[in-house]
Image (tube, rainbow, N blue to C red; front, side, top):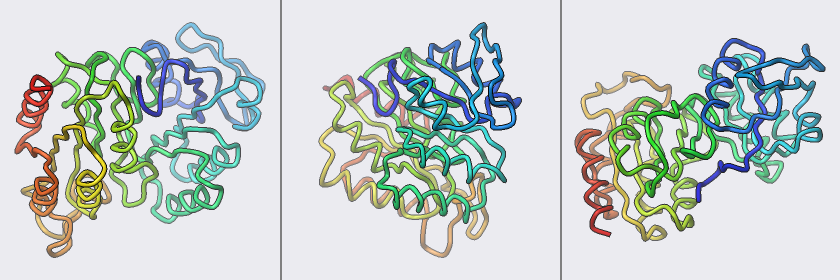
Length: 295
């Protein structure tokens, strides 16, 4: 099985006709994703051909869902329009909204997060500022390259896009059920805990790899959750051991303030919960490989 995204997922792309939407929709189709249309109010009614597939552009998410049965949206809308695009997807009650867009103001992200909570969280938001979700050999929603790895028994949840790709490559000999890039912004939809819960419930996921980074307390909270709710072996990696205090490193949320959010604190919390933590991505992959072989 897979979590969040399966071979049956029907995807629309908000921002399909933009350069990024077109480029990555082409790659998603090549990876086997079922894209059923796009959304752009200014180009509603047009048909675009992407990757040899004719796709209708709809005026709203609700119209696209009614016409195609779509249950997933991948959002490539520019930052200043992204809040309205996500809220539109939430109001249409689409099941999964993958927000790829980088540079969305924190206030905007907090606004659509709160809007989703107020509407009963009928939409799972992944992101923003994330690489998306891929269930290898089943479907791909986002910008994760599909040729890095194949299907297998490992579940991966990661704050970092590039470390997602590296871990997929490092463990390509085993493969993955689903890889979820949750994004590194201060306000995100799906968290480490959400993915851990889903992987724990997935019978095909045997080992879980969790990648975190400095800033915030998400990894500490995930460690507490693992301690009481996760029975499967978990391997962790925390990026940012050499990051200087007070300096943002890469992601907007990756900043150490005083003793809060350090890589060492996160590592200690995870190890206290029984999680094996690697010093490097390669060592982390080897730990996951060893745990899988021992099952």
